[in-house]
Image 1: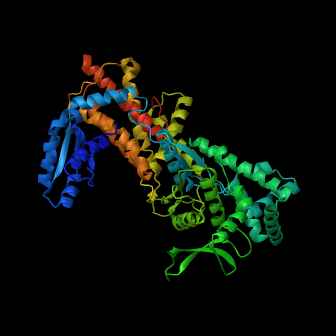
Image 2: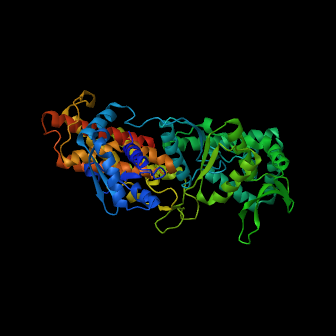
Image 3: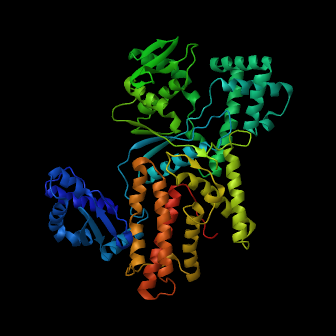
Length: 578
């Protein structure tokens, strides 16, 4: 049960009875949730609409609802301030709901009405290796994929990788050169970044090579058999590099989720023809453009969206329009969510507007840009290598594991080498992803090794360690949590506070997909772990006796399950000991 929605319905019913049909209750967790406190703020809005005194309206509402306390599980209503209503839930109600959640494999989270939702995320350029900038789209997108799937939606993972264009001319020419000289092509391809740098340097310094590279672009676009063979080999190797990183980071993308730019190459001409048939295309400086009234520049003149260049080539807009039509018409998605850098907001806004005008997107289909900010260094500048190049994501992941291994070895040296290596990978990768997910996705954030790997504060290691402490309770007791069947018996404030927070897990998960902010779930899990520590320090568990002991053990068990489940939805693993 989502407690907030449950109370919302109760208060909205009361407001409706009083004639305030269009004023929602807006129930939220109050500032002091320790005793099951909530607060209803909607009375203020209702009073304003009725032009009445908020406290008087609040009293009318409470008089109406007093008789339903037992049904709603409310112990006490209290009017506070200018007209807020504080709500205190009964321990009996909390215990009943907690028993339901503890027996439910979904921990009280209901399935939503299923929709077909496409998530466009990660989408690296295959000409280079994935860099640190890809972490945001990849981690945020994957967490939301997992959550949406858990909520019951049909989710299509779409990895729209860049595998076409002029930049591939240099790479293919360099591959051809290596083959002709008998050099080991496979060896050179092991480091795509170095491979790309060598090809680019030759293009700048060797005019004969540059001419050859430009010729390869033409050959690639015309479907030359040899050129396509080289290109396919390069793309296959690039995808292998990407998949190795996805596997290391525990990202749920697979090669089957790749639908590259090149997949739309054969339909680009017909895509432009469809735009022309709708009367959307104008010629500007020899290029085919679409001008939409809602997009203007500083001079208030319409901004062009180029769909075909003056030389006949197709820019990203054309490919993205073809992809939008495929997603709208062929896949028939209800929603398409593009987890893409915020700097692409104009491009994507134009894309959706043009696709809608062309009929590629139907009125009942929602295409949305889910933007994110930039990863910065400690100086507040984009995170790059010393020479200004992009930091490889694979190198960052490996360093995270190495740093975590040192921490684990110092903290628990008696563990075996294999145990330390496994734990280090779980902690390192978890820390890297959580550092990303715990931030508001629209803001820039500073990449800081010490903060993300800390066992204190709102970090993955802190939450993972909290989980291991719960597991250690059952190891010390020699108990299997499945053997605990006694009902909850909540009497202490810390018990009720923890129980209430556990009941708010469905609300936290459902809140993530309201605006695709994974940090909502991160903040909940951190707060839950703090509530657990307060409970554990003030309420003896193993030293307690009888029903009290069993109840507290069940609180420990449900807390551990919720932490593990919540981290799992974020794509972060746990371990039994650290």
